[in-house]
Length: 573
Ligand code: 9G3
Image (tube, rainbow, N blue to C red; front, top):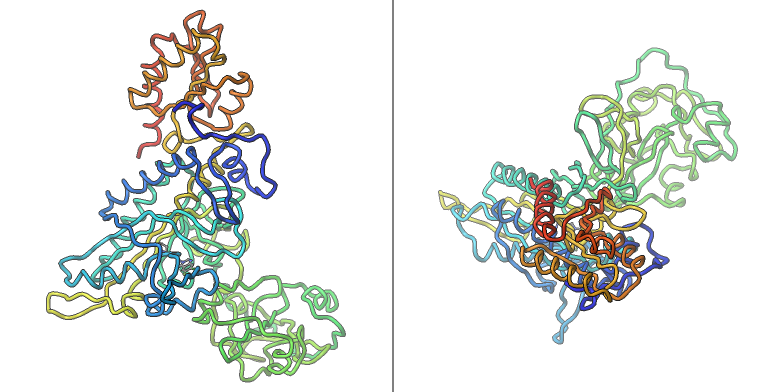
């Protein structure tokens, strides 16, 4: 490709709203342009990188036994009503109406549509397992689109769905997909980790997210040397042993005027926050629940949702707390609390002689003991993990890192097939719902994550496997016929050898061309300069290491072709 025939608008300025490096560089290097909030056009360079990722994903999905399909962007509301999700997703689900006043969703994901296809065309266990995948534009009306294509409202996703006769078969495909994902992200040149995750509203219980290590990532991961890694919504903290029975002091109600926060109460009573029991009242459906956690810890509402078995809950309002506990906000406690479901974090079992609210204004209890003063039947892990919490597998302290989620795989089970009556016949002619899995990769997001991980002060440093071009030829002066011809000859030689080359044939100052070459980040740069040309030499430079070698111009093509092959081999799996 010749720069002068191409659209490659590099910028010196960065858009003010670009908060992370990948967003800034994707705009500055001319990969994307914003059309509207969370909506981007891919310019030629951006599209080339996206296609590279797409092709790696496609190859690995085919290798894993997938069949590529393309489902419509529009899906009729009836399918979503059938699955029960038309009313679950509120404004995030973009909806349009046709001329007959029929509603359609702009596909945010395709569980419903693929299940409909399979229930019509797959009848027998002999047709299973089946893996269908597509690479397609998805729509989600994010509350707060940001970080460029990382959290966009329209984005490219690879979504795959698998259908099985039983859980054992699903488990095999899940493992195969896990392996395919590992190969995909390795081939893209990413440092990443698979992480145990929460399945959210989609249902199912086994799920892993694939996270690209990045300081600016939105996801916090808790990890241990033993190999355990989990998201903040899943990371388990080891349950604590029950407290010794001995040493229980007498329960006492004390006056704590005007103290409502953990800090105020504990300072006033000269106690530590870890000695206080926080009691948080939630409205769960039409009922109330009190959630009990140690004073120095916070509730994780995703974990709480799993403990409650529903996502239909909110923190109770002050008036509701008065009604339920008899006391104002800030003075709730489990002692004498009636008609309220009690859920305690595991660590509460290890507490003794606690401070709790007394369910009346300006009063707390001290020396409260579990079993003697109140009882709890439901213990769950409902707190936000923090660095240093013991690993659930080996007990060593957990450390944390940040990442960008680029993929997620799920065991769905029969959640969709049951409600949508998608069934097959077994050997005995008996009907069963399909057991399903689903597997996503954010394709545009993967490109951004790669840039987030591979850049320096001058610009992008592409892994060669997903670089828009492999070689960047830079004649320092196109008015010089000798330079121009040398550059053209190398361009033709490399292109004929199947190398992807951009030739900066602009009549621009050499300094600007070097700056743009670094910004655009092509792995190998060939400089055709005046001095070198006089000696019959060109210069080959590695963008990543800065390593530079002089090449005889008659040998240049052969050596560059070999270098490209070597660099690609380093990312092969
Ligand atoms: C919606 C809307 C947003 C959504 C969903 C549905 C996330 C939704 C989860 C998934 C899970 C898997 C297929 C590939 C693998 C991942 N946000 N999810 O289901 F209607 Cl508005 O999409 N989908």
